[in-house]
Length: 465
Image 1 (cartoon, rainbow, N blue to C red):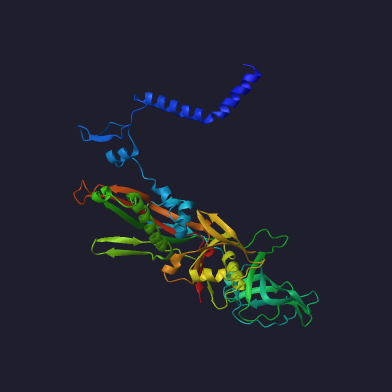
Image 2 (cartoon, helix red, strand yellow):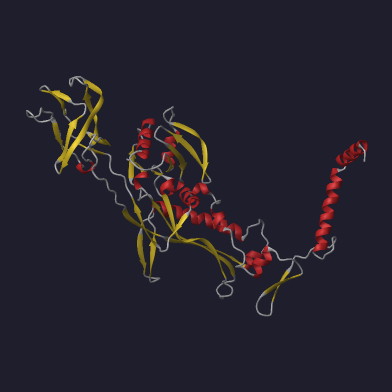
């Protein structure tokens, strides 16, 4: 074939490409039908289930399909419930959704014991006024300060005295910096300190000035000398906590006549399953948030029922606010409290009732606190709220409204929320016909699980004062 003939052939293919595609499809159908032993012009049979000699099932007059498999052997094919549940209205159940995406740890018992490691406190307050005074002749300028919690300080710690001015090198001129103290000892009555940028009193430099009661003391880093080899010991012990796995169940039934009846809309068992899963998730969400851990004796069933404890009660911090004075400054204080003084991450989630989210929505944000675009995580759309302290993912949770807390909210750290599952979410078909109970198709969905918060101080309740 020369170049001219090749060009003519290409033009013909382009003009007749639809016809060529049609002939190709017909040829493939004919080949497939011949491989199955049928006739290309014949209509394939749907197939029928017949009983075998020993109680088995057989398909005749057609191929095996999923519908026939479910009819002949209901337990053969597995329902894809685990994946389906994460797709059913995730915005309405954010806690349940996040915990499923994070994965659950298997619990070998309905009672879950776990350990939390807290962080050592970093601040306390002066419990008794300290009055400045010059040391006795020949003694170094030390001071004995009584605090609300002396035990958080050790020798060689440094302390920032919030709100009390330090002094310049002359010991007379007040500095713009706060007073800094150095711990030299501790006893049951208080902390023995020296001033780093202290005051000159009676020609004695480095004295500790007046510190009023209620002044905040912030523990800073340790300062060792050149010859120091050792340092005061630091030990942390985990604290044991416990929660109960709760058995959540939902049953869906459909009578045989209902299944066979003609319907104006295509309402099937699958639609009922979806509605049931949504209702089940809403109930689980409320239990995971506000449930009370309890072992309840049911006198009718003669057995104990375990109720799971909600994470609302597990959070280690509380931030009170007033609605009348809610402003950008309130948000700054809220984010400072949420992101400081704990071992948490810099990205957290704030779930709130409608009134609390409404207060956030009315604010005029600045460069210090800025509202970003919507962010999709864990299958949920959040509003991003950024600050110098960290980033909050804001989301309305109608569960708070339904539970009578539209003004409240909860800040959770997704890195430290853990789900324990004794029985993973599953669906089981009940053969009520064979048992002689009811002429229905029945499906029972079950899960035995609980939620726990690691590092409670990384999570915070927001409550209306």
